Image 1: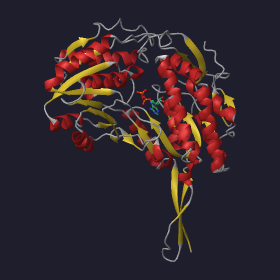
Image 2: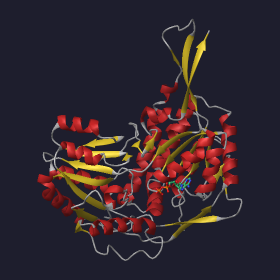
Image 3: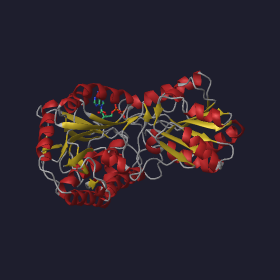
Image 4: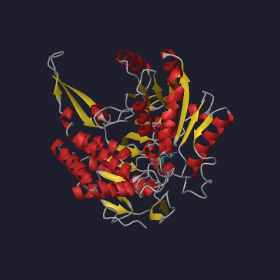
Length: 483
Ligand code: ADP
């Protein structure tokens, strides 16, 4: 079982109290690398969620000044940095990613608190310069109300931080549901928030089964906004559930990121950028490259450069030294990746790197290590091109010219992240303007940052996280005409 100074409790948090499930039911949290049980956490349902929403609605009636909200954000961010190693260790234990990535995630998550603490002046009332219809007009940014957040397991701390920091900064009160596989990062975060002195009811944590919890979050009249990160399928379910109640939604959904390499690009820089991007969290992020398109004349050279690098990657328990990739989150994840690779090979792809079989199929929901794989001769009919693989597979296709590159990159219902490598700045600008993706990396594989808005086009969702846009997501603008 896990021991941590940040986990004195392994429970939910409602109205300022650590709380178990009324039913007494628990969920086991499993280390995906070893199968060790880390903790039993409460499995809460509709009754506890209703209590949490009511606590949040009660706290909303007592609005704190901007200065106080700024102080909370700064203090939470600072304490997260103080505890980044322990937060990183908890992330690695429950999620599986290498420890260095866990610590980086803690720093990234803390960055959202520091950033939004410095942006709250954007919420101050603005008086319009001109009198209109004999009135003085003022625009306020009121907090939207109770904000519900639902987050996935691939960045158990950061995905939550992106939502909680702006929601708390805007003056919303919060009910959070983390993924059932990774609730310990959320609990550790709550320990920090409690120590900072955020008042009872302002931040509530529910751990439990998604259906009943989200039924309440989508229908309770006090919840005004639901901010969700996860699959497009679940995003659609939430839209349907929330539709009769006209709730605001911010949805960060699946991706199918293309990575374009033009013939004038530096092959080494592109291969390094691809590796850094593709293998983060063992390929289980929504901004990880899913499809690589290389200009025909350099396809063989680029594929060799990538293969050489991928052969050196070490897979194992993320707590061990020198590990580049941990396990996939569970056997379902492993099965999906393997089905994609098998489908590609049956349809004519060539496996350049990767064991066959990659390892014996994991016996249960742990130990789902998948060998890093490189596939060449990938074509658009293959599942690796059409769907998000969410695993350590580099799928390489080719393109003929700029128009073909743009056409293939955009040939998906998703529109979250895209990357391109070229030495020609004019081409980079032309291509970027045509890419239907919310985040574009030019000569870099870097993902989002707290300072810039991040979100999807098309079926990757709507709403933005980070940047001023991410703060305004949790506000209702109110125009006041003073006669
Ligand atoms: P992933 O494929 O990343 O696990 P999911 O969309 O399945 O993405 O899960 C993301 C979050 O959504 C998790 O917190 C999960 O518990 C929650 N979730 C899963 N199914 C539902 C559902 N039917 N309604 C509401 N939330 C759900």
